[in-house]
Structure formats: structure tokens, C-alpha cells
Length: 314
Image (cartoon, rainbow, N blue to C red; front, top):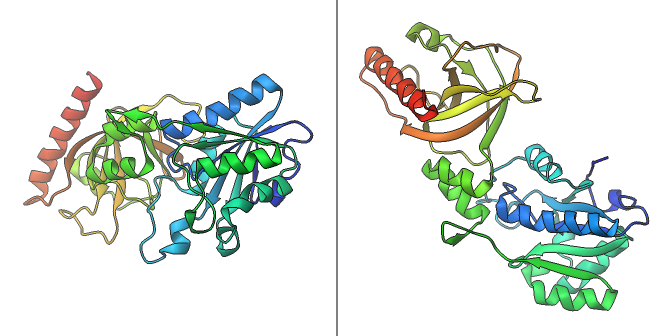
């Protein structure tokens, strides 16, 4: 049974006496490169009768070192943990990245892990992983220190996508540029958001295009605009519904303070206020802009729906 632990200390009994295969990293986005590291741990654990787990961190180290300009994350903590568990591991350890943890010298990291995880057998990292105080540690140092403790290290080479290494940084850039299709290729699945349908001002209904209002405040905001999406219940159990989403400030009808996510289903809508929905973002149609009036906006929405149907092939 999968478990989530809020610190290394809390996970001491995770593997029992079985060898623990531990994938380590921030894993923001859980993209194809991350999946390769975690899959290596999971496959080795299955072959050896061991237990596979993931060690990740919260908050991102930049929150500690650059609080005025932190890295904006693709996934919040709950989404990241859920995505990591979906990789087939027995547990996810979310270690607080605080001043005490950041001060651990590179040479002391493995002893620290072993002290908290007695059955630790092998650690799995990406080839460019850095660790320890001042980010001084690299894979070569990790291997050298592991030998002293009788531990093993597996370093996964970076995976390329479209001729360049896949990275969370690259995916963040694609999302802010609205290149959602390219981001999805590197993620290995559709970029998604989740939210509970809230009652709105019925502005979409007055335009003839009723929408679901899905409050959502991502750390990293994708480009404002209109997207082809699908919508389904976040808990599963129903087929995805084809839809168009507008993520923006709605400058024609009201200038919102922060971006709003509104979704219009291309077919009959079975959802309403209180429903917890997942939106999968599939393609970018156009940037948000202010129209001369309601009639011009209504005409553009009709074109957006036509473009979405064409994207879906109907």
C-alpha cells in the first residue's frame, strides 16, 4: 500500500527489512526524464524483492535561497505527490527543505539518509543532480561516498525531447509561451488543473455559451488565452468531455484582478457547482485580447468552438 511521509524521520519503517530503492529529486512536473529515474528504481525493487520509494522536497530550494524570486512550480505539492505515486512506488517522502536540511554537507547526505532509512540499498538520481550545502555534491561524489557505506548509486542519463534535454525549466518556458502541445510531449501526459466548480455571474450564459467557473491559482501561470481541453471528474469514473477553456482576465466583460479559468463543453454539460473536476489542456488556440464589444466577442467564441471541434476531428 502506498504511503506519504512528511519527513525522512517519519519514513524509517517504510521498507521494513527489505532493501529500499530510493529515487531522489525535486521532480517538478514528473516529466519523462523524472519518470525514467523513478522507473529504474521501481524495476530494480521488483527484481530484488525490495521496496521502491521517492524522496522529494517541499518547498523548492529557491524559496529558501531566493525568496524574492523563487522558481514557479508546474505542480503543487498534492498534484506532485499523486503523480509520483502513480509511477508505481510504495511511498513518497516529502522532506521539508529548510535551513537545517540545506546545511548538510555533501559528504554527510548519505549517512543522514541511512540513519533515517536503515534499509536503504540504492539511490537513483538524474545525471545532473546536485546536492549538499552549496550544491557542492555531484554524482561522482555520491558514488564515492556510497562505496564507503556499502550503498549503490544509479545515475539516469538525461532524456532528449526534440533534440534537447527534457527539463522542468524547459517545460515551464513552454507553458508560459502557450506551447501546451510541446509541453505535453515532454511531460508524457496532458498538463492538467483541478478545481471545484463555483457559481459565477452567468456572463457566459448571457453570451449564449455557458461556462463552468473553475477557481484555480497555479504557482506557474500558463499563457493567458483560449485552449482546447477535456474535462472529467477529478476522482475518475467518467469519460472526458471535449471543451474549450478561457484562462484570462476577461477584459471585454470585466477586468479581473487575477486570471480566471472558464470552461465551455462542446456537448451537453453534466456538471455543476460543487463538482470537483480535472481539466486536461491539449492545444493553444489564441491569446486573450479585448474586443470592441459583446457582439465581436460572441462571434470570436463561435470561431473558437469551431476550431476546437476541428482539432478533435468533428
